Image (cartoon, rainbow, N blue to C red; front, side, top):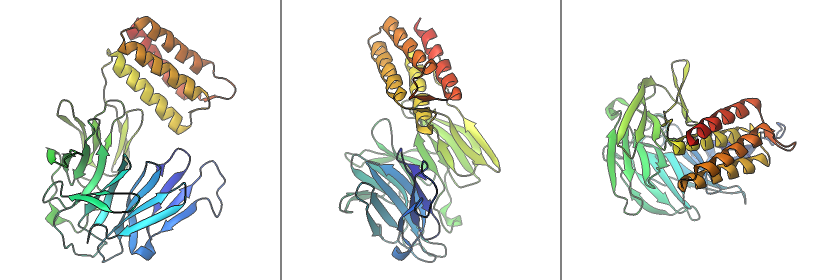
Length: 356
């Protein structure tokens, strides 16, 4: 399930169905709205779904006993939907990403349950979203049979998980290398591989976070690109994994839900400001902060950042105070719930103390 800021887009099994749901509207026969059912395209499960560049992008697993997944591209503005079946011959599509009006998709050699793979190496394809043409195709990690996740790192490169191997691809040359072997997978023990493994970018620390490995034995990790530091936070993780805009991330082990927070430097005003901004973004995304106040709060933080860049602490303090004033005295058209207000006030106060 993904959000475009207004609608929720939901992938459903079986029949590889995509729905659009308006959470602000009543539940009716047309809400959720059926966008596309891909059973007629030979598809059964959706295991990759993203919203990017104004498009909904999905990757699918084919029907039982069959090979050859599909890439679905839906244009919400026009309602046009295109499904490209077997875009990677005999391979399913298990990861998708939209970036700079280009689509990247990762594959798995496994098809539907009961099928027998014909390929040995998973690939990444680069697709023109307007035509569905595959512009590039490459094997990121030879011997790995699935590419489960793709993200754009803070360095501008393409990062992904091929099995339990973390790799980096230069988007100019497509040169690819394995950066960390986090949780190697014995492929000979598997009959299929679809949904295991998660990768995201922490919005506060800019580290890569996720789970590498199989469900029940996955390693929860964070990786600092700048320092090449890999940290393992837990083992034995199941799926799913969720990276929140506050910087916290969540995973499941057995029947327990866990949360982790990556520590930022508490004496670095820039780091504390980044955490405050990420927290505000999270509250806006959750609807806890809404209305014209979002622009006033964002504008105040933009000015704080500008003053910090130019080493002007006193004007930065003035803007922090203005930020707190907006939080404590919202206008009638604004929404700021008590929990969000307390969180933002605490973070802003900590930032102000560093600037004094």
